Amino acid sequence: QVQLVESGGGLVQAGGSLRLSCAASGSTFSIDVMAWYRQAPGKQRELVASIVNNGRTNYADSVKGRFTISRDNAKNTVLLQMNSLKPEDTAVYYCNARRYFGTYSYQDYWGQGTQVTVSS
Image 1 (spheres, rainbow, N blue to C red):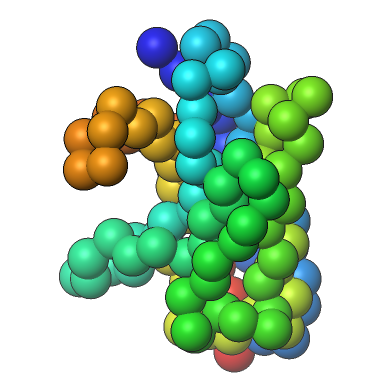
Image 2: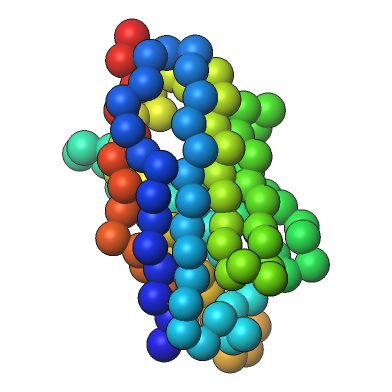
Protein backbone atom coordinates (compact mmCIF):
# COMPACT_ATOMS: atom_id res chain seq x y z
CA GLN A 1 0.00 0.00 0.00
CA VAL A 2 1.02 3.56 -0.69
CA GLN A 3 -0.30 6.60 1.11
CA LEU A 4 -0.19 10.05 -0.48
CA VAL A 5 -0.65 13.39 1.26
CA GLU A 6 -0.85 16.61 -0.74
CA SER A 7 -0.23 20.15 0.45
CA GLY A 8 0.27 23.60 -1.01
CA GLY A 9 -3.05 24.46 -2.59
CA GLY A 10 -4.81 27.76 -2.06
CA LEU A 11 -6.12 30.94 -3.62
CA VAL A 12 -3.94 32.99 -5.95
CA GLN A 13 -4.47 35.76 -8.47
CA ALA A 14 -4.04 35.15 -12.17
CA GLY A 15 -0.38 35.31 -13.10
CA GLY A 16 0.72 34.10 -9.69
CA SER A 17 2.45 30.93 -8.60
CA LEU A 18 1.81 28.00 -6.30
CA ARG A 19 3.78 24.91 -5.44
CA LEU A 20 2.07 21.64 -4.64
CA SER A 21 3.80 18.93 -2.69
CA CYS A 22 2.94 15.26 -2.36
CA ALA A 23 4.54 13.07 0.27
CA ALA A 24 4.41 9.33 -0.29
CA SER A 25 4.72 6.70 2.42
CA GLY A 26 4.34 2.95 2.68
CA SER A 27 5.56 0.72 -0.14
CA THR A 28 7.15 3.58 -2.04
CA PHE A 29 9.76 1.29 -3.58
CA SER A 30 6.98 -0.12 -5.76
CA ILE A 31 6.06 3.19 -7.38
CA ASP A 32 6.93 3.49 -11.06
CA VAL A 33 5.24 6.75 -12.00
CA MET A 34 4.09 9.72 -9.98
CA ALA A 35 1.74 12.29 -11.39
CA TRP A 36 -0.60 15.17 -10.74
CA TYR A 37 -4.16 15.13 -12.00
CA ARG A 38 -6.83 17.78 -11.64
CA GLN A 39 -10.59 17.90 -11.76
CA ALA A 40 -12.60 21.05 -12.28
CA PRO A 41 -16.32 21.23 -11.43
CA GLY A 42 -18.38 19.43 -14.04
CA LYS A 43 -15.32 18.09 -15.85
CA GLN A 44 -13.47 14.80 -15.95
CA ARG A 45 -10.25 14.29 -14.08
CA GLU A 46 -7.32 15.01 -16.36
CA LEU A 47 -3.60 14.37 -16.28
CA VAL A 48 -1.56 17.50 -15.60
CA ALA A 49 1.98 16.12 -15.42
CA SER A 50 3.80 12.89 -14.73
CA ILE A 51 7.32 11.79 -13.91
CA VAL A 52 8.85 8.37 -14.25
CA ASN A 53 11.55 6.88 -12.05
CA ASN A 54 14.20 7.73 -14.64
CA GLY A 55 13.16 11.38 -14.52
CA ARG A 56 11.29 11.49 -17.82
CA THR A 57 8.40 13.93 -17.62
CA ASN A 58 5.17 14.46 -19.51
CA TYR A 59 2.84 17.47 -19.47
CA ALA A 60 -0.62 18.32 -20.64
CA ASP A 61 -0.47 20.80 -23.50
CA SER A 62 -2.42 23.32 -21.44
CA VAL A 63 0.34 23.57 -18.82
CA LYS A 64 3.51 23.17 -20.88
CA GLY A 65 5.95 25.96 -20.19
CA ARG A 66 4.11 27.01 -17.02
CA PHE A 67 4.19 23.95 -14.75
CA THR A 68 7.16 21.86 -13.69
CA ILE A 69 6.99 18.47 -12.04
CA SER A 70 9.93 17.17 -10.04
CA ARG A 71 10.61 14.21 -7.82
CA ASP A 72 12.85 13.65 -4.82
CA ASN A 73 13.20 9.89 -4.58
CA ALA A 74 15.18 10.09 -1.35
CA LYS A 75 12.34 11.97 0.33
CA ASN A 76 9.56 10.16 -1.55
CA THR A 77 8.14 13.53 -2.56
CA VAL A 78 6.83 14.90 -5.83
CA LEU A 79 6.41 18.61 -6.44
CA LEU A 80 4.39 20.60 -8.93
CA GLN A 81 5.58 24.15 -9.46
CA MET A 82 2.81 26.14 -11.09
CA ASN A 83 3.64 29.53 -12.60
CA SER A 84 1.65 32.01 -14.65
CA LEU A 85 -1.55 30.56 -13.28
CA LYS A 86 -4.80 31.15 -15.13
CA PRO A 87 -8.41 31.01 -13.94
CA GLU A 88 -8.87 27.86 -15.99
CA ASP A 89 -6.29 26.14 -13.79
CA THR A 90 -8.82 26.24 -10.97
CA ALA A 91 -9.49 22.66 -9.87
CA VAL A 92 -8.91 20.08 -7.19
CA TYR A 93 -5.42 18.69 -7.76
CA TYR A 94 -4.75 15.05 -6.93
CA CYS A 95 -1.44 13.32 -6.44
CA ASN A 96 -1.20 9.91 -8.07
CA ALA A 97 1.24 7.04 -7.73
CA ARG A 98 1.15 4.16 -10.17
CA ARG A 99 2.66 0.70 -9.83
CA TYR A 100 2.93 -1.45 -12.95
CA PHE A 101 2.59 -5.22 -12.87
CA GLY A 102 2.90 -5.54 -16.62
CA THR A 103 2.55 -3.42 -19.71
CA TYR A 104 -1.18 -2.86 -19.27
CA SER A 105 -1.70 -3.91 -15.68
CA TYR A 106 -1.25 -1.38 -12.93
CA GLN A 107 -2.55 -0.13 -9.60
CA ASP A 108 -3.21 3.51 -8.83
CA TYR A 109 -3.00 5.23 -5.48
CA TRP A 110 -4.55 8.64 -4.88
CA GLY A 111 -4.18 11.47 -2.44
CA GLN A 112 -7.14 13.29 -0.92
CA GLY A 113 -6.80 16.28 -3.24
CA THR A 114 -5.97 19.92 -2.69
CA GLN A 115 -7.97 22.88 -3.97
CA VAL A 116 -6.31 25.41 -6.27
CA THR A 117 -8.33 28.53 -7.05
CA VAL A 118 -7.08 31.18 -9.45
CA SER A 119 -8.96 34.46 -9.42
CA SER A 120 -9.12 36.74 -12.46
